[in-house]
Image (tube, rainbow, N blue to C red):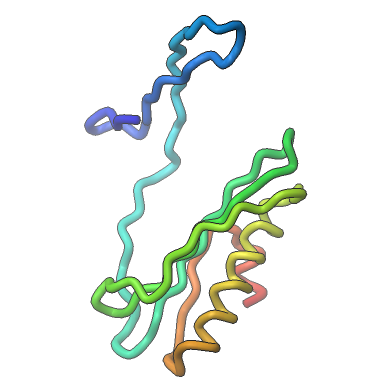
Length: 123
């Protein structure tokens, strides 16, 4: 995928999976906003979680990144999630995994960031 300079669009090419013939299709995905990562305060870890969901298939996945104030990765993981039907469940699962991992590996304070507002507010 490539981003058009100055525009909030990403263009990619998709291959048709049927019948042996490969047909290239262009798909255009609108990006809502480009947000730059900001570091947490000194001595604090920042937990970023982002989930994706295919409601038709009931499959999802979640990516987790935990960084320190210098941007160094402390934890990074991607988890496939079968049998899910809600993006909130996907992201809540990601936060649960991240927070349990932090609890087991670090005594540092942390802040959380994700785009499922209901989940982050509950934390």
